[in-house]
Length: 396
Image (cartoon, rainbow, N blue to C red; front, side):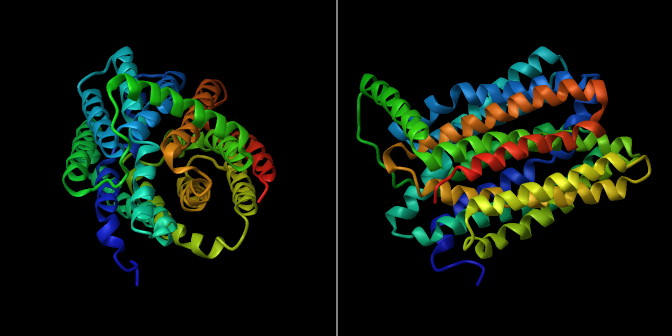
């Protein structure tokens, strides 16, 4: 059976919102192309992505502590509403500075979601004594999102070919709002923080933040998983440059939707292999994944215009390898965290990841304008080597 006993009863609202958000994300295959059509340089585009990442970096721990001290459910719902409205706003403006501000707002909104969402699910499952569903949630949620991702780029390609890229912003923003409404109505929350007045809640937030940072800094496994996450995030910034690179190989823009659909199909299947890889140590599995990806991306240097099918194949397989990150790393990370500050510590990791994405985006956005996207894609492997070192320091 695909689903275990009572799995859908406990997790269907979360699986449904993963499907909705992923289905609405039709903009992703065309994101960089859209900003290039607005005459933004690669460095300007990287500044936008960095604005999102730095916003998440700055607000991640306070919002995670808010979720621990007040409500994980309402933290997630509020985050979806804020991000959804900001995404819709991008569709109405073309000014770089206004779009920059909207990316900052999106980042803030998503900090209310990251950490809180995983902690919300894990504590619900623990309440019902269903720890056996921890890994299943991380596997299924990614696969369901990937399944929606098969359909989403194809619809997006049709819209782009028939109209333009702009309407895809409105579709994505509405997806966030629908996800918020659905969770509000259908999803329960079993985590109940002790009731406190506003000042007490503020003090508790500060206390949780300090505890979360201290635990992340002193706990060996948590510390090196966070560091590994940072450098893996820096390793995958090449994903932003495959769109213009494939276009440089003479791939029609609308075909990017087809390529991203295939990526989602591969990403839907591969997470299920996590069940068979869990008998191996996490650090050894990621060492193999990173090395395979470095070798794969090095072949990009030998592609030339007209070979966009081969380029698409390399992109598909390299992204497929990365789809194992979520179902392998998250359950392993979560099992080491204390309940009362789970969302805060999860936010520390997310904060580190966003920091890595921000720095990586700036570096490679700057280099892309100088040496071209074809030459920077293989360079991301350097960060992968540092991630391997971090994994090797984990004692398990």
